Image (cartoon, rainbow, N blue to C red):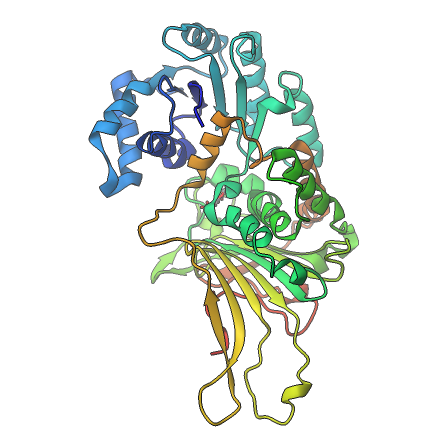
Length: 494
Ligand code: BG6
């Protein structure tokens, strides 16, 4: 597909996200020759840097990520695309000067993508200034705006934000990013489900016992204390990334891969989730905070000792939740979701547990290991699709063990692509299928709102878990006594 050149304007270009993800992703797209000729990248930052300083900063960002694969000649080409625009987002001048810069059509393409990697409280004011300076005017080329999460703080604030931005932009111009949708394995969930005919007949309440999604991290909150303490794990990961994963695993087959078909199906799932009444929150959700502990043998602080965290904070760094999707396919199948920082292992996995087979047939044998079938979708760090089956052990006895069928999809020489590369390219293509529509965000908030409201008033106590553990004891969420959090990708019963 031949793409027209565009200018990427990155607000918050000197911040963490840009440093770790955006600039390396744009560089990799250049390495892969996917940035159209004439594409330029304008970085907006408050720091008083000149162009040379910016180029050397970008070199650091890119080499930190590319390591051995750094290519000096591509980097030189990449540098010709970069421009540093110093300015304060609170000052009108920053935007008028930006407009003058971008209106120089000899240097900058007509198509412009604005990436807002800034505090959500700045979204509205920045859009107003861009609009006042006619920078959303599509007479000569398209104008698209990429908005990072969190999109609001709850349903009400998400609505207020939506109202404000829809004053300046049409829905077609808004790209609400959830970087989980750009992950290779996440996209593979759709292929796995809809390109393999043997799965569809099994993918429902008749065969599936429950589904669980775990995202655990070893890292703590690093230098993000200010943001994190106001957000917590439920807003930071569950409301966004994990609910998105749940929709992909449970939605009906969309009519096509086209954006609206896909998003329609995801919204249907979110709308079918049974609301959690406030009085039932404790049976459906659990929160906890990490206490001091050990990660990889090293002693680490508890959450309350981290920088910029008030000593009496009750912000959760672990959140888990049980949901029910009340539709024909899933009624009665519990969906368990959990996420935590400073846990035993960094891992994202979707684990699908099948029902028990009738065991009558084996009643006169001394079989000891008769586990359920599981399908394990490893999202990161290990990308894998595994199906666990029960097989007979070689030998004279009727004994069984679990064997895992591995549908690897990446050969050793095929590198993983960072989610942001895919998504930044989709913006150039105008493909919004992996971006969120407002009603997705809205319904996701509705699901977690009662939990957040209950937690907000219960300020006296929060459970803790030692850093480096698998989290708190929250088995009260489980609907059956044989349900448990699955933390491994290898058979539990060999
Ligand atoms: C971000 C959250 O959206 O996702 C972070 O704000 C979290 O707290 C991160 O660490 C996880 O993303 P990934 O791609 O590292 O799994």
